[in-house]
Length: 254
Image 1 (cartoon, rainbow, N blue to C red):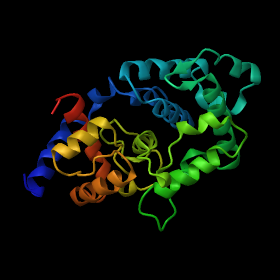
Image 2 (image 1 turned 90 degrees about the horizontal axis):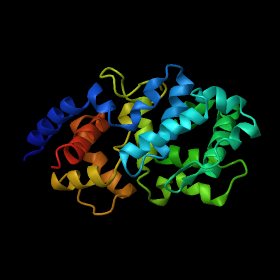
Image 3 (image 1 turned 180 degrees about the vertical axis):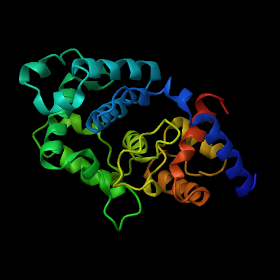
Image 4 (image 1 turned 90 degrees about the vertical axis):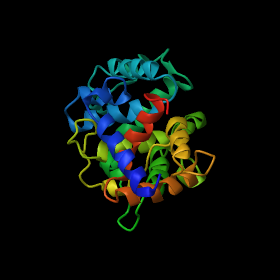
């Protein structure tokens, strides 16, 4: 396919998959149960952080996280006691365990108390046209309070080469326009033109089949390569093509 034909093909797939039906089988359904901005942010952040592996299990465990926080995540983060955190004992999703969960709640409280919340702490500087440094700086802030060394692995750092798939997915949820009813568009101080496609096995393999990605590893260099093409297709909303690539891989087995 020519670039024009490829863009037309992917635009059609975006239209097919970016709709309310997408929510039914995706972890984005967790923050969709809330209306308060901070609840949406925290539910979305925690759900995205455990979003690897079987999607049914991701959704099940993300719902359990919300249950353990009384289904009021912002209130829990800001007002929890040590006894409240004790309720997390026994929670585990793959390598994310109760100790990690406890720290994430404590760190989120620090971010809302001392850094004006998740929207501010993940915002790129004005002269940056992407989120690489913003995610790197966010990780430094996230772990500025005492923590177990093992917990650091749950926040990726694109400066060290990671594709940071889960953070990029969370950013898509918060920043992209809500007009289709899937993403939220609640971070008005951010710009969707700077977003990156959440690169995983499915999206990476489809991008390679469509020849819009040549790099074999799913790392930050692959993100940069994919960015170049997707931003040519839509400079204002390049990450909308996540729906096309993901849908082709997961639902169509392309």
